[in-house]
Length: 338
Image 1 (tube, rainbow, N blue to C red):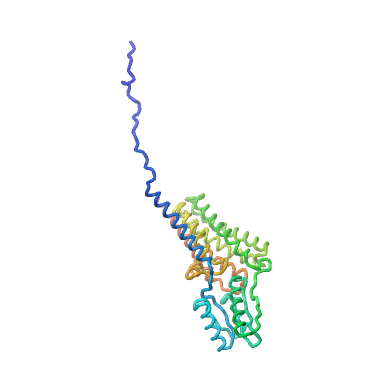
Image 2 (tube, rainbow, N blue to C red):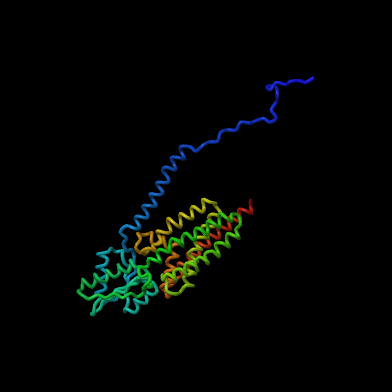
């Protein structure tokens, strides 16, 4: 005999449990995003605009060769016209000593005043914008004393990049190369610290050689390919090591923080397009402690000023590389504890 069981009497094989509905984003988060992003963007825009609008010289090291009485009058006139903090005037015994100081990047230019007239010594390789300012100072002095004026370029860039635009234009690709190497190492090789370190160690060397070869081919630099390549490798390495370390330790947010620091802060504060001396205080000084500013100064010195000291920017770049290495080591230590 077959027993029929009503469907309502059948017991379910599995009991379904009701789960709470996931909480959607709150209006508080919406309000934070609506306010925070425009405020951050506006702040960055204000910094960019303030650095670009009406740049003025700040603590520009300027050489002066003139008789004592005339030198004192010239310094007073410069302070009255341009401001007390516009120029830091250093007096030299003769034009040869001033030229030597320009070649070592101790000063950006010089003005020599004598009975035969005024000679302006410039350095377009250091900064075409500053060279124009120094030339203007010399012309003003010559006009005030009714003397003829001549201009001599002590350190000039190659004729194929006379305005230095090629050098400045190479900044963005260098930044992208450093960020890309560090970000790819942090994300694609997550958890493999030794592989990440290998990428940011060898990658900048390859990129530096490539950039230097391209600059030589395009006439941005005239020889000295290997020293320039090493300087570029340090610049790219400082960015890539720090980006990789921040990404390895903090994940994607760490990569984002490093990219913002290098692209939106270090880039405009470097002063490579004009000169750190033309940025408002203290931004020009601060920019030289960041990888782009220090790397740009090092590369410019190696490329055009072989007699200039490179210890300062080199140690700064090595410091950023060391900071990235410490972050990578901390990420490896955290993995072992997990």
